Length: 419
Image (tube, rainbow, N blue to C red; front, side, top):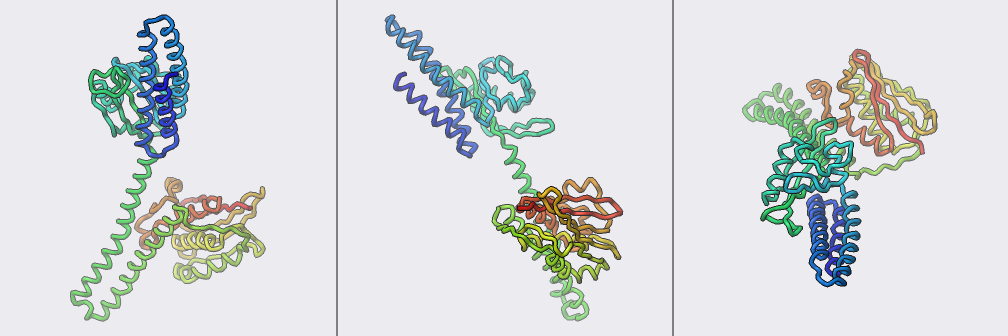
């Protein structure tokens, strides 16, 4: 093996490591392009060496070295193509596939698992993909091309296509082929969508009480402050909307801390009955105002394994919701069911409210999701309570689920694992 070829293979090994380890999409894409470019350079160099040597003994040595170099790099190249998460596709000047990897097969949903010798038009009708490869064959590098697949699992890829010249490196003159790297950015796109929806919801939720506060303040400044009866009527409304904003900001900060993993959970054996009693006592005034009866059916000797503060937080949110969205004369029941298989205990909060339509149950624990937005705002809800309960249950290693029937009520169940 020549010194130059050894250096090229070493550089390829480094590029492979970068492509497989470094989380940056841009760096991994560049590394993938470098590996393929070096591979082509070595293959072409080996080919030239095997044909340009004149003496018989030099020809024999050159062929042996070329074969050893080609074999060493072919194994490295094969491992790289198979192990990379990015889809790699190489086409010749006739748009026929000459190399690909398993990730590319997944992209094109091929069960037969072989793309070689197929034309690009046979694989896809996506104009973005075809146009990018066509430009590369004209010597124009394309990057940042967004590609979406259609089907049950919609995937989004960032495509970069570079021309490959006759010397095995990217060239703008008479490209002999093109190399495309498909980077899966589906998760990033979904996270960006969630972020945008979150900001939109927060802005909307804050705008409503803030508008009300400003309107009443302007009315007071316009002379209504001299009218004591009007002032007494306006001030409680201003306080209510200010409290709503305060609660919303508190819930946003709490949920953000939970999702970021900054909320410690120290689980220990706890007596459940007194914790439920404390929560019910703290919500007595709300229950009386709504003419709702809350009953603790938890046995006095019942014990669960949880963080005391976070368990109280979950129960408060669930019982508070059961009271708010109940009917006059309704009931809320808190029950406990010990684990039957020694794995998970169950805490149930059941109400006799109007129930939740089935189409809403799947999204009920999403941030800011409401079955009835107008009623939720009227009751003072922030739309984050159930999301907080869900994430706290997950932090305990448990989960929460809901069953509901319209006209009969709902039952929320928190499952907590035993140690």
